[in-house]
Image 1 (cartoon, rainbow, N blue to C red):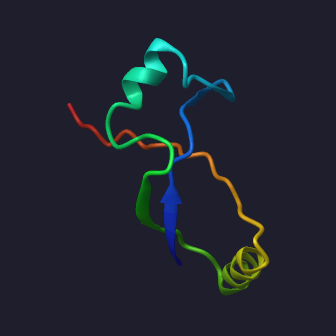
Image 2: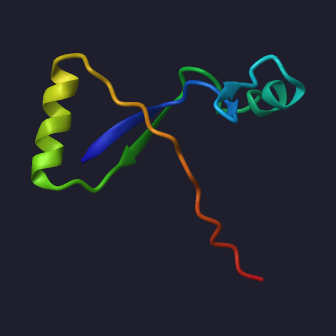
Length: 73
């Protein structure tokens, strides 16, 4: 399912770091509130239908992004 990822905020331990030195530095580039990225998630047909219906009813899920380190040395 193709999705739009709308950046909301930088957080650490579940709390916004917006007004901190790190938060200001991280927000200088494209990663600031409202920036939208194209994405895609893999869902079963049932889960995709459930998500589409929820969004149609203006119920939006929020996800935590966890990156994978694929750097090799």
